[in-house]
Length: 94
Image (cartoon, rainbow, N blue to C red; front, side, top):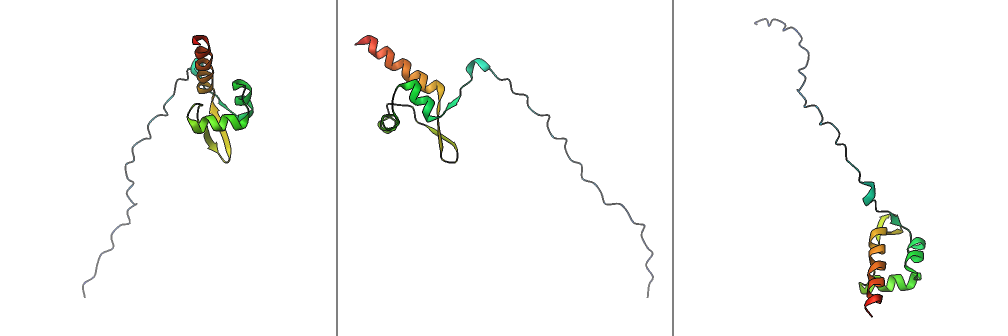
């Protein structure tokens, strides 16, 4: 039998890992802020009741809502205001 010589224990090699990229700092333009409004605020801004808002959404004549989570529905303040401005502008043409 041949005897084997013991090899010295070596520490496991560490893999070279790339440093994570620095966090990206986003610049926020607060003049372009767009809030998500609940139905009650949309009803107040538009001057319409819930049923009419949903009928107009289905017909494609009112901004669609988004679902940020759960069962809640929210509308873009910009889109609702743009709709309102368009309605007012059309009134001036008549």
